[in-house]
Image (cartoon, rainbow, N blue to C red):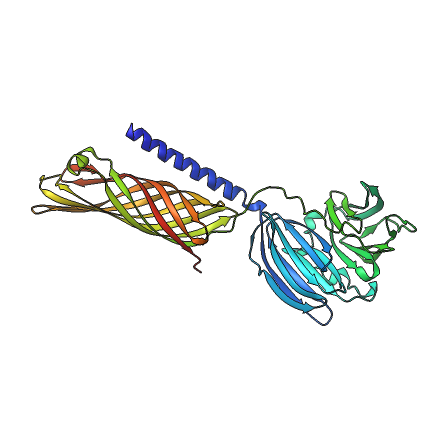
Length: 455
């Protein structure tokens, strides 16, 4: 019965470890990481480069009282940027970064009362936001000056030349919508001229143009839409409004873009829908030191006849997380335990002392939750043992696997301290003078862990 229980414990730990590994590595590609925000100042513009690794989507909108430009990025796992950066240039006072929802990062540009003109473009490896004071549309630089080489699609992806076919507009669900129909691959950037109530979209590489400008629209404040070639492979679409430019969001579709404008009084746009709903808790420290103790029951029946009762095993370990994604953490642990028992020698039956010092290295998976951190680990033990009496002494070492399951309980108000409860199974055999002793066993213990960030 005891062997069956041990086998069940080992199989359960291995299955859980495999499932967790598949989940963390399988989902790694779906979550982006907000790496950094770099600011470049010149006499003509202020450029904020938002570096993002992984796949992501974004939307931007404006808020008033006070004036702010908001960029929301989703899905985002880790955020490595500074929370607050002072700017005081081109109408931008500060840049703030935080987590709006568990999988949504929000970057807020705090603005002065007079809103500068700005442009937003998705580039290779992130997003660029450029602020400038613009007195006319002619002051906007050509798109070729703003496009890095890596943003150009490879030649093999361009099966045919892209064409801007047509532009349509209308009211749907009490909202103004403008659809720009494009056949083929393209990139685009948006430029808002708030002082002129104009929205500009530059498309490239789009060498072919079939769409015509639309005059005298006069629908929901939209007066006209102008389409023109600004270069051999660039097309500019300008939306001219009679009043204040409304907040909007842009959806990329298979045949182009769809732009939805909200009424001016509805300034706040709902956050972008995320493909996954998950809660990401604050990350745990990357390094931890743990003290533990618990009764250790050795499996061997002959040993238990001589050394009666269970004795406490004391331990110390250092663990380090080497990979994490959201609430999933993989790490490695190094540690040593100490066990000492008294009884009669297993060979001479004299009064003797048995000492066991297991050294181990393990890989572990930790699932970070709001109040607890369940974990599972697999490892290898080196079991150093010694049995000593007045007339006899034997010593040696043995190797064997280790499997452990447990849970860390977070201590409120003391973030770095956690209680640890665990169940550990060890297998090892000592061979002395044709006598085999199973010194493996099972320990149910508890401990205290202190976490800290190292490097």
